[in-house]
Length: 403
Ligand SMILES: [Mg+2]
Image (spheres, rainbow, N blue to C red):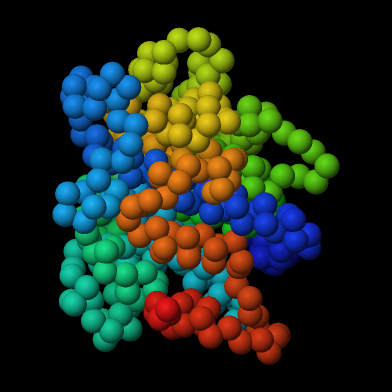
């Protein structure tokens, strides 16, 4: 990436207080909405449709099925990794701002995923402060959050890819490197935060979104859908001045951008076809389940994108209806719920998410804290004298600040 483009990438254009408030609501909505869809779908991730409807009735699951022991609606690996994505972006950008050197998001995020791997392999006690200062990890304040030390059906590809990364198999360009041939949805399900942080050249942003997915998923259908999602969310949260685009227009623009930046990829047609199909199905009168069956089950990247785009386009004024449609099928319910929640949350805002989804969501406070930090951005830089103690603790010393 060229130096001048990198600098542009980290400059935040001036905005009015109203624009700031709207953006905060959209950023919170995107990250929180993703967690809500994830938590709604997680209990039925491995259930067939028949089982879901037998257990929850003809409408399927429409309320949180809370954990018996904690009384909470549990988030899964989708949200855990989304939080680490955000933490990585923020730590990388803070390092860049304070040292005046370039840090590409993919490098900082790959380090944060090493921390996520530790939460999946070790207990919090084992991850001592000493260990956190070694090269094996310690890049995220999220390591101070006890609830994250929990395996919530993490994807094998994410685990094995990060074990390779931990063993030194790291790349400058993850898209080119193609670490493996997986096209699972573990890439797309966690990339939303990058779309909320940067205002920059869209081709570059989409490609960096693909890079974040390609840290673990080397098949192009594992990372191209992530680029499309990042484009859609970025356009929603940072609308071009003086231009009002509909969600459908944004989706088609994202498709065309992907077609350009991934030109020559032999699987590109599969990606653009499923986007077109999702748009078309969202405009018919058929049952959601029937339409979703035509798009697949969501275990792989392009199907997760297709189902999420379908649900978001169809229910673009109703967050609850969108995530309920997104999780009630035999496929990967938590990931299709999470990505649908990301898009609809960005589009409608945090305030439009019904209170019932905000009650008893696991780690609700941490999710909002990360969202607010993504919205604020690093308040300090190399040239300035301003010191922010909380920010320094979280994104330079990588420790949770005490309340
Ligand atoms: Mg999951």
